[in-house]
Length: 231
Image 1: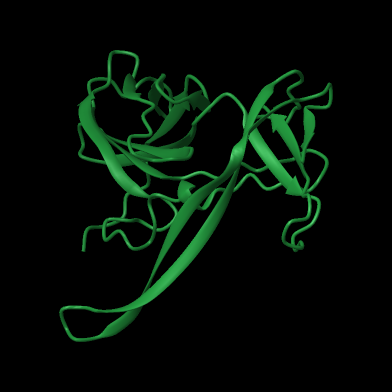
Image 2: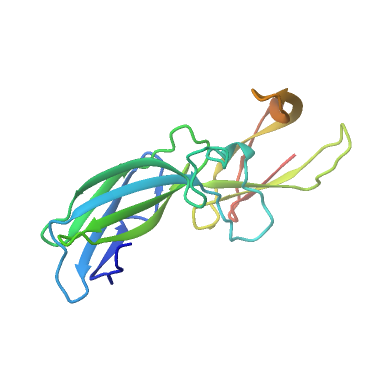
């Protein structure tokens, strides 16, 4: 067992922005400096990025749902999933410059994900003595400029009765967006489950959902509070 060595330098990661829109570019500066002063120059850098689902945390007034069951794309069923971090999507290497810095650049891509994601980016710097020190940061990739929340006025209703729902449109900071046009479509979800047998002869329940559009789309526009009501 190798003897523990107290780190002689520090590695800090700083993103150009902590939140970006899908399709933009993520840039992260890696800065390595000795505790006694001076940069860790010309040092090996190994970096990796992992992606996990991100669920918008609304901090405004009212009880609105921003969750869509189709937004979950990573899942614990993925054998490559690292709890709390997600799955690996990119990695690379390089060397720090004379100032002890290195820049990580990667696209803010959601690939086949239907919702926003959280990227965890980690970099490990190894000095000439072979001592590795790591740093880690997170960057949120938003699927759009705004988030739409829904709050039905009733959760159990009679067939044929008119229903109403309240909407809110907010930015990433939960601030309301006024005058925003919202296209609303009522959808019926039919959940089905069947028992299937795997290759070992074991049976298990498998769930699937079928969505059916009901009626025509409704066009709404938010007021100065970022809210709208549809029936």
